[in-house]
Image (cartoon, rainbow, N blue to C red; front, top):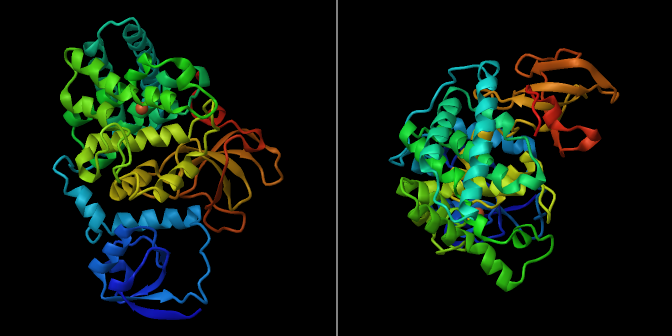
Length: 423
Ligand SMILES: [Fe+2]
């Protein structure tokens, strides 16, 4: 491999940066060696370095995509690099950010309450959607009451409601999507350290972010093929129609409406409905955009099969800078834990299992329900192991080797979660 010293002023997108003129750990860059993919990365390199070493064109080979393990290690490193990390400093110094929460309940203690709440929320969302279809106003008092209970559950332990967010039925997409976006937004807001009042505002906005879809024909929302220009314009109209409905309903706070208004705006300015760019989108709009996109690409729809949670996080990492605030995407990946609840994983023991609880301190060591033995025979009985202290047969620490697609080997993750409810 031949490298060439280059002044940072001469850097261009597409070059592969092999070395810096200072230690990597003193910079915000996630990977020790990376291909420059955006002008923002060029500017960041100029900010931190005088010169760098790039692969020469003769020796340069396009790098393989980052593996889940590399992403996991990078995200783990980020936690320790907060003080030095420019993007995270930017996020951490946002005036809404507060110190993080600690779990008050274990998952087993919170799961029953979370289950009742989930069903209560589903009934409320279905009623709200029906009201809007009939041209009635939003029951804002009901929405606020349910969201405040969701906030308390997420503060006590966000994993419990996240388990229920795995329950997916195609025919109830908009209602379930709204609930999942609400639960994801609250978990993410908790991770970012938003206080109770802010979480309540964010939660109401997230729950109602797509309410304008009740005014868009189902044939367009669920159309399997490509939309015509006219149909796409109609689909996009769910944003202004939603904002109008929320504006006209008494008692919906303005910051909550920002989630509906801005959840399709994109960081580069390429989103709709206003084409807002960068920080003009606002924190609630950015959070709404991230969790809405994450749920949309990881769910089955009439026009696409949802990707695994893990693959969705990787995709969103690729889209940082272009679509989302890069620091917030990194925080979201940390919040989801690289191996989100419901991920189907292969261990270095050869066993295959489902992630049932995240470890918010050691993010690479979740609890896993074992499903298949190395010989692919089912694991007898229900057996859950904590990867923090589970070992291979020869005594090595147990690790996740790779993440598998949902449905592989006929595994339905929901059947292995610590809850027995009908979707
Ligand atoms: Fe939307």
